[in-house]
Image (tube, rainbow, N blue to C red; front, top):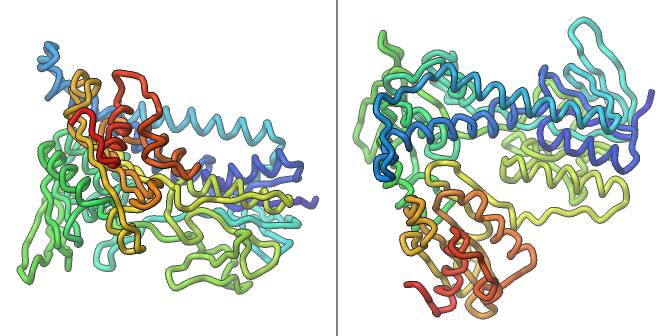
Length: 463
């Protein structure tokens, strides 16, 4: 049996590529070593973390914010085990959906570890047996795995990765989070809401440093109000397990500090999965960080072998992998697939959420643009005030000469949804005037973005 395309890895990039290939008439197979399809995103990443963020935010709201609405929530309690069961149910439901799509599109599914023999052969290790598959093309979509620290080995009990931190059976008394990016802030938020004393250690001067300071400073203050303590410009140097948990020694501005907690969550990033793939043996080119090198068609240095998603360079985001999957397969089929890397949105699902697309103000200036900026606080937005979530702002960065929007950042409830309008605007190379003249329903949070456009133009309406 020979396939037109074999995809290794069934995460968002892999299963999307397989579906697209099958729809374009290719005889397609997909190889996945885990029992469940969906990859990191579905099984231990995006989806379970959002389930826990949703549940824990409801509890936090009931405990701290219902009173202002006249709602009495006396006797409130939380059952973490039930919360985890709901999270697991969400995963199962979504996984069944992917299974259905694979079968619906007549994609052959091989459970096992895929090892590339050459550009036309893959061996699948299924434990009890090995199968050789022939193919015209191979697409590597093996994703990424958690990075660690050299002096802290994961044990799943005291030293946690994000995989472990979404599966605790009860809220720890205390937790140190190493890393103030998306994973650290999201999972730190989950456990802080459920009663854990959370300390976040970040080596940079501020958290969520991919966003503008105008966004990260209020974000940090809001998270501090929720009980998270931050240690910035701080680097962890060593660790020692204790009877109570863990003791970390860190340095801050040449001063040594010690922090103790029941558990430590390491959230210092992710690394590409290229081990046990056969990539090195057949001399697929890798960069110094282990990412697979690709050309404009997402093809490696070996003709017929392609790669997408976290395993190649660029942001490690599920939606980036999905878009690359579609484009790469379209290129294989002779179509004009493409990815606009300038309009990939970034989101951190804290409360409030923070989302962005395009350039930050500093990046725009570094690229030589003369910029105009506009900030609109949601305290002046009727829907936000009525809904009691007026903390936050919308910021627009535009090219002063052409008025073209270069970047947008939003700190607010539902920022992950609001950013879609900015992404679409930038995809069509729109201007702040285009946004300002677009009618938005009233009252809505989306009006905040329109108002920011008016501010950018120097024509504020509600400020």
